[in-house]
Length: 195
Image 1 (spheres, rainbow, N blue to C red):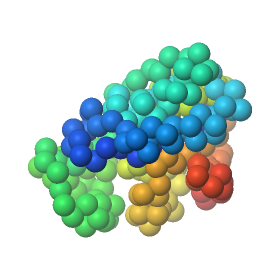
Image 2: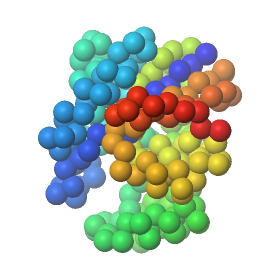
Image 3: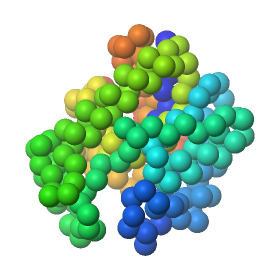
């Protein structure tokens, strides 16, 4: 069995509009302790992450504690919205979830993000078979991956977790078959299966 613990990043500094370099806010930095606490007893053998700073910085304190490097994978990156900052994020997100091919001129469609995340997942399952892996991730990228494995998780699920940073999703695989998906609110430690 392969156990994958995807961690949506902690709160970022929204003043920095650059996706690649956006760092964690002071609150986000403090909340990395919740991530380390959650992962500490999971016997993690590898730590992977999106290359975006906020995702790396969310799992880095745990990785240091565990004596593991953080290995970045380009395909785990977050969806690109556009070259500029948009004001009506909710309207944009709702439209994207209704049509996985919809995108702005310089952005990614959710279908593209989902295909990228599925490719990353396949590589992780091959490279870390029977391992326990922690993975620094993002709200949209992780949500579309959950959706691909549990189609009932759609816009409503994404909307529910939109302000939840960090957020953990534990996938259990038998070979390439996903046999369980469980989400955990790291603030309350409440866990529930995603069906």
